[in-house]
Amino acid sequence: MTDMRMYQQLSADIGFPESKMMPKMFAFVADEDEAKFMLAASPPATVEEIAEKTGFPLDKVESMVDPLFKKGLIYKSKKPDAIRYYKVRYFMQFHDATVLTPGIDQAFLDLWKAFEATEQREFQDAIKDQDFPQGMRVVPVNVSIESQNQVMAFEDVKTMVEEAEAVAVTNCSCRVIHGITDVPLEVCMQLNKAADYALERGTGRALTKSEAVEMLKMCEEEGLVHTVENKYGLGHVICNCDAEACGNWGHDRAYVKKFTAPSRFKASVEADLCTACGTCADRCFFDAVSMQGTDDTAIIDADKCMGCGICVPTCSGDAIVYEEVREKEFIPS
Ligand code: SF4
Ligand code: SF4
Image 1 (cartoon, rainbow, N blue to C red):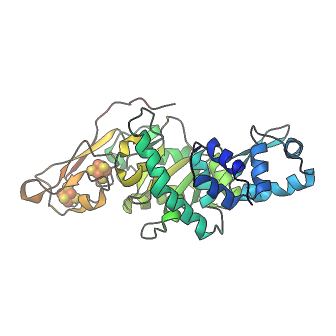
Image 2: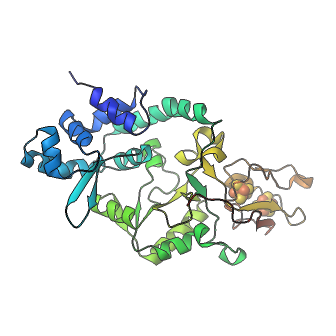
Image 3: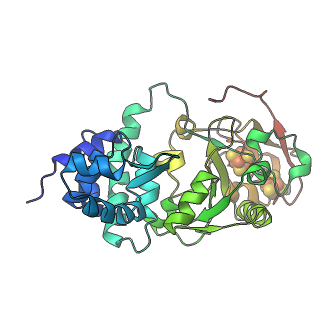
């Protein structure tokens, strides 16, 4: 019978000490020897140190490295003196890395889906009134309409890919879990070390800078919202998020601004130019647009607008004013 205590410890270490489902998810992807290896790889450790801590022969430890790395359960810290290994540290690391493992079992994806519908939802409800910095931030659409805005480097996806030393693209782990196929799947852009990691694991495909910019433009045309880590410097990922599956919004987008910061921009409508086509209402998945103006023209609720700009390039009347409404606000560095 499986001893679940190691899996409970692994769950606790990524922030879910009380979870009933997370230990089962760890047990799905790691056998007991692998769980023991992972616990020994904290703090980061060489294969010799892991052999000593686990009591496994060195050749066994060495043979376990590649499968654990490929499954997204351990990471490598390459230093001049040695390679050290460390176990998955964060919830989103565990989510993204394991879900994208080539050949992953559908039953594992179903566990994730069930977790999101129950424990993750309860967790989000429990913390919604607490103060914490949003982990992610919406970045304005600015490949399709770049001439209209004075975007800064930290909110310019084009600059981000141009400044990155390496860019790769992976499938979107959220859409993989939910089996969503009506919007592009391979749009999760990885930068620098994250790109190197995806390529080494075999979960990503290298992009040239121009391919990456073209992909960002395609995402804007498809109505996907650019979302990055909520900090000034170049992050590791540019998500291109959809309405239904994306984990960045919190469940049902009920209190989206709690988890993801809006951009500095907001959209509004010049009623005289609006043809009442309704395209903006169809494209906005933050429910910010209603067709309730004079002659059923569009009205945008400034409180709900996340400033993504996805409604702008497709406006048939060129009626949407998309402008900076805040100075460079505080963003965690
Ligand atoms: S109205 Fe909706 S689609 Fe347009 S910028 Fe605001 S949040 Fe984005
Ligand atoms: S897309 Fe433009 S023209 Fe069409 S309803 Fe929205 S604001 Fe009006």
